[in-house]
Image (cartoon, helix red, strand yellow):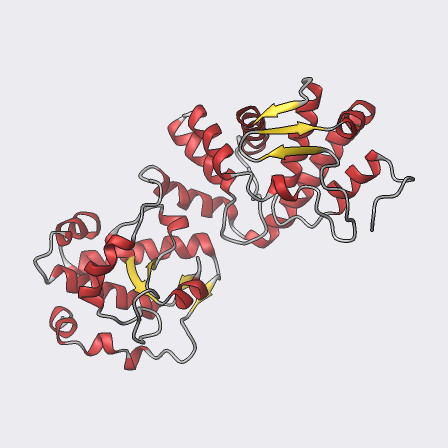
Length: 337
């Protein structure tokens, strides 16, 4: 549907806010941010000012005891939820705002005007240069001046409606969040992992952890067996090598228990060597094989609590019983009980 002269700016605004397909609450938060920036007299909003206001919108929403999920996929959290949780621990407001500006706008700012069946409205309410500024249009100012209170009420109602729908899908959202907090204190940003390939190949060979087939140079990914989005670290005990395609199929899902047993066996192979990493594994998982297995299973239980039933059992045709990893002498020696 193209723009029509009989559609007012308010008609277009309502269509975008009330009838768009929302997999998360970002569009609603940006709508409230735009109205707020207009009310404060901005025409061109610097990126850091936009980031601060966007963060405040979420801070108001999430800084409550019974906060609700902000996206549709069970077990996952939005970038804004992760930024807010980190802020609660570190109380670094400048850092949180900077993180918003760097990571939170990639989808919502370019796509705010998108609506199936309605073309030709890009730039209706703002234009932007990503990372620098967002320029508000006369149409936005007009909409805000005519119906500011009503528009905020509609946005709040839509936000609440989405949260309610997401909470139904998310199951035990509060308990899952409590589990996530365990890992946030020691969280750090993702590090480049390719430097671990040669080390991991020494204990895994050139075989994909998930399908048991040979890997070729250039088609090797370093993967977190237990999803990083929960554990928030890159500890070697949780890293394996996989085909790129297998890694993509797995994504952030929970692996079947046979892969946990395999990970435990792989870690014991490292512990049976003289590599310095064995000291790090012992310090974080435990001094004995029994303690390490118990600790790894504790993490596995936490991940299942957070991600619910989002399981992945492996690639089609994979059979743990015929996996060449378990037939290796070193593995048998290090897991002889």
